[in-house]
Length: 442
Image (cartoon, rainbow, N blue to C red; front, side, top):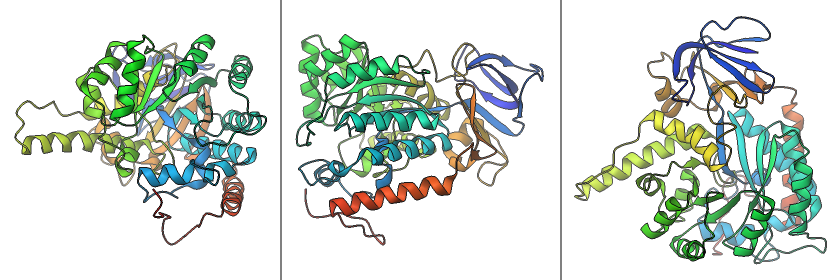
């Protein structure tokens, strides 16, 4: 397969960028990048388009897809109290079929938006059937995914057949025989025993570190020698300098959800702190119940956040200010930064010969991008998901001419709607279509 004649943004300094070039794919991998690479095989005309590596979403809760926008107006205490705390919380009403549809449709949404890899921090593993349904949904979608099995903890209600850590071992064995698109990780709280289980199996660890106290608790694990390069820390809001120093010193990865972190008011975003400590973060969309699964929106949020905070600091009289981020730097965070945070940097994140052929083609002859004067400027500040015309995952074309291949959208969305109806009926939670649900609780 040849993606021919597009503006190539490789995200690989050794490959560079091309004003007009070809991406040659053989099997599942990128074989070559250059000019005039021939016309053998399938040719996809990319004239008037930007060709770049697929976006890597390093933090998403796909099982929540049926709850799209439900907590749009919530703050952090309301979201956590209604979603998972106590027996009547909404998440506890999920059946395996609801998990399957959330994962499947959420993964299709990612692909449609140009996200070719996602770390699914799954927090609905109440039974082996729930976990199996989640993985089946990911597999059926064609998305490259890291399934971060998350043990149920705290006020979550464990079913009689709840199986941890046995399920983690079982899933590792099953996924090792898979086609490689879905791999395993552990989504864990700050817990030394959980981390030990993950390391015995050789899977990466993803942990929410949502506030300064969590950062201090993380430092305790660090002082015990338990922080390492297999850790990815999610959100990292309001962390102290000593916490950031330990993350950097131990090779930890960082995933930021710049939209949701700000709308929930869950703490000061960690973007500048990560950069100050030499850490290139990846981006995550978090839950679609709170914000969009749209990496164009995530890039804009990060770009504007960093610049506005510098302006705020200048207005407050600070003299030593960090440099503003450029659009190429933001785009690199959305691709290679995410691949690093997902522990897949040797596999995806750039258009590099030998890496997996995860490629996105963006149309520029559109109302929002034409005339094209800056490729990275258009991708980061102007475009949206409507510009995504072709998506390739592991050499397989999953979106062509602006439509997902082989997907009956009306049927899929109808099934998702039935799932949403069941969740609200079983939970008794209100569903105010003309507004958003925010109670006084929390």
